[in-house]
Amino acid sequence: MIVKEFDYNGSSALKPQRKEQTIPSKETYDKKKKKIEQQRRKKQKDKKIKKSVYQIVLLILVVGGITISRDVKVYKTQQQLDSLNKEINSVITENEALKVQILKASSLDKIEETAKNKLKMILPTKENMIKLGESQATEGKQ
Image (cartoon, rainbow, N blue to C red; front, side, top):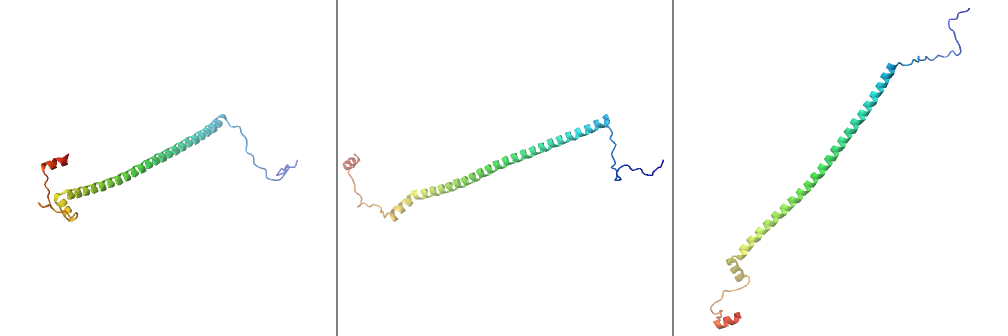
């Protein structure tokens, strides 16, 4: 028999190396299954955390929006109150000025001065006075 250094059967192309297929044992199967289950639980837990973070952020935004809207309403109300207070103060000032004018106009000296200067009235003298008798005075009253 001739011994050849290399024995070729078929093609001389490289022969792919094949992995040995071994049937995994129960322990390795359980380990892989446990690892996959842990990964799945971790993903679910991460999703839950992410969802709760989104909910908290949304809640903060809603509460912030409500707070801002209430602050705006309070600010507008404060502005209205300030304008009403200014208006009240101006009316009070005007009212006080009118009271002073009334007091000035109602003084006897001022009335007499106005009657003499503006209305050209004079004080009556005895010649300008007409005396009515008692009979004429009572007739005029009836």
